[in-house]
Length: 233
Picture 1 (tube, rainbow, N blue to C red):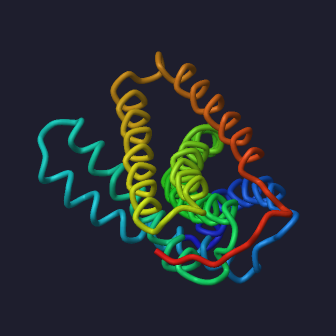
Picture 2: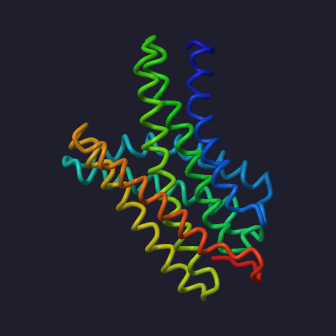
């Protein structure tokens, strides 16, 4: 194992994620989250990859059709990202305003994406195929990273919209958000892996439209001067 290649692959995965994270943190300038919770959420997302890999290998052996495999992979990844944000931040007093749910879910998603992208870069770099590594980096930066962000922000918005409601309602909203995130992720996997290059442009376009819509919705959710409270699930 070449330490130099390993470092380049790691930085190639982490640096783009940091760029997106910096962008999303700008949405929370009024009441920025404690740095240690952001860092821990990011690391928690990265650790989720280490759990996802064996789980996805196991489920791939359980199903014979692609839809079931894609659905199981999407469910594993979305639940792990949500779990990272929940166990690190969302069950503590630091979660005290609606926007926090989006910030922590996005942070965990970008941590997950960072390590996943680094692993995708590792193979072509180890083989000396720099061109393929650059193409992989570009596609991951523009596509998969945004998919992870969009799926997780869907859950974050569900939590944010139910922030001031009862615990029972918040749980229902959370469940709906998770189901929607898994559905989006499954559709992405299916069209990218089954339809190939012919569908890439339209899929990426839909993801970008989704991200723009998410940002517009985030602006509606933000309430810097509203009442702050602490909730738990």
